[in-house]
Length: 128
Image 1: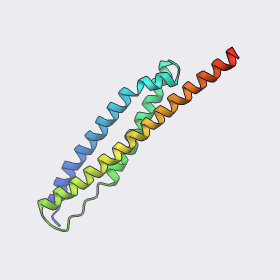
Image 2: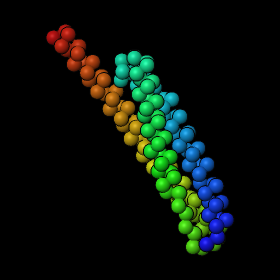
Image 3: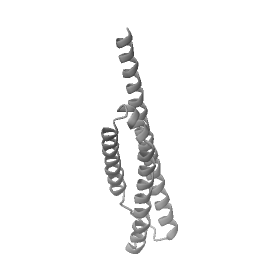
Image 4: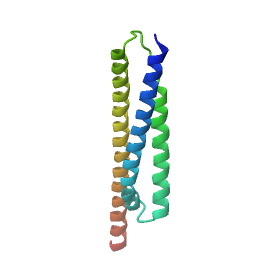
């Protein structure tokens, strides 16, 4: 096992994992502000604060997972094995990020649905 190739693998994997986490987070939470405003009935301060908390949790979970799976063992000292290990790690992490993205979207849509349902119930009580 050659340490140099493992270090090269780390040097490639870490920036890609960090960038993917950053990109997905910024895209998700920039576009989720509208849902948060709807959920919190236009109260911008609480919507932004909640969105920021979700974003912080997203970073912690995903960066933690990226670091947790960092270990790379190479028993064959070739660049082919290095590329295959990297593709497996980056591909697996990308799938994980996609699942986390959809999980967050589920929570946003669920919150939006609950907020809409509460508004309908309030109208029924007021008009009823």
